[in-house]
Image (cartoon, rainbow, N blue to C red; front, side, top):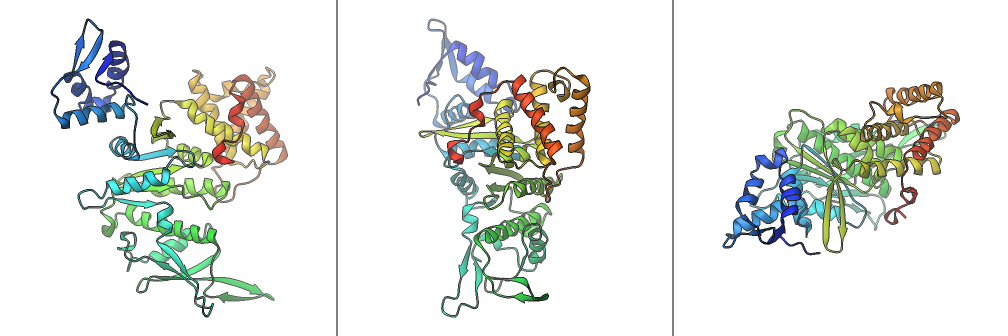
Length: 429
C-alpha cells in the first residue's frame, strides 16, 4: 500500500486533511499550522506540493501528523504505540482479533517507555505469566511451589506491603485455594481445604491447575495495580497500566465480572495513571465500553504489513457489530443471563441515537400495540436497575427469555443488518 504525500490533490488536502486537523485537540498541537506552512498550492495542477529543502525533523513531524489522522498508514506496531501514547485519554480500549499482534503491541508499548533508560509501564500479558514457573519436586513429589522471578521490577516494591492479603481479597472471587508467599526465596506455596467424612483438613503443597494458576497471577497483578492507584510511593514510576486479554482462562460470566472489577479499580479521579486495555473478546470489550464511557475506543486490524487503527467512537456501528453478535451467540447457545438486558439496552440506546430518536423505546415496535411497547420498554428498564449481578449472573427464566428474544428479533427485523454478522468469525472458530 502506497500513499502519495509529496503531491496531494486540492480536494483531498482541503476537505480531508485540513478538515481532520480542525479537531480541537489537534489544533492545540499546532498540527494544522505545520502542514499549511510546508505545502504550497499549485493552481495549474490543482494540487498541493511539499516544499523543497525541508529539514529531517520537520519531515518526520509531517509524516507523524499524516499517520495520526489516518492519511498515511501505520506501518509498524511502533507507529501504533506512538499514536496511542500521544492520543490516548485516561482510558484506552482496544479490540483486535487473535493474530493481529495485541501481545506484541503491549511489549512495544512497554519498551517505548524504557527509552532514555527509564521505565513507565506496568503490564499484564503472556509475558507476565512467564514471571512465574513451577518447581514440581520431581525427585520426592512433595514440595511443589510456584517460583517468582524476583529480578523483575514487577515485584521490586512488594516486601513489607502485605501484598498477600490484598491478593486473597481478590482471589476469593474466583477460586477456593489459599497460598503463602516467601519473598526471601521467591516461592509461592498453595494449599486447599479438603473435606473427607465430614472432617476438614488442609492439603499443603498442592499444584493448582493451569487455569487456577493464571487466575492467581491475574489477582497478583490486580493487587499491584491497586497499590499503584492508591499512590504507593514505591510504584510512583508507573505512568501507564497496560492490560492485554486478562480473561483467557475465564468464562463469559467471569469476563463480565472482571470488566466491572477493572472499572471499579481503575476509576480513580485523583490518579494521573493512564490505562490501556486490549482484548479479542467481544463481550469483554462491550462491557468495558459500558464501564469506561469516555474512553478512547479503537479497533486494530492488520492487512499484510499495514496496521489500521479505527476510532470506534467516531464509527458507532462498528461497536454495534460486537454487541449484536454477542447477543445472537448467547441466544443460540441458550445462555442468556440478566446482564444481557444491559447489553440489549445499550444497543437500543446507541441505535436510537444514531437514528435521531429521543429514547430507545421508539425502537420497540410490536405489532403496533402501544401497550405491549410500553410493557417491553419497562422490562428493559427494570432488568437494568438491579445492576449486573456480576459475580452471580442469573439465567433468565423462560418468560423473560422469550420477551428478550422477541425484542431482539423485532430490532433485527426493523433495523436491517447483514446476517453474515451473526456467523462466527474465523478468528473465533
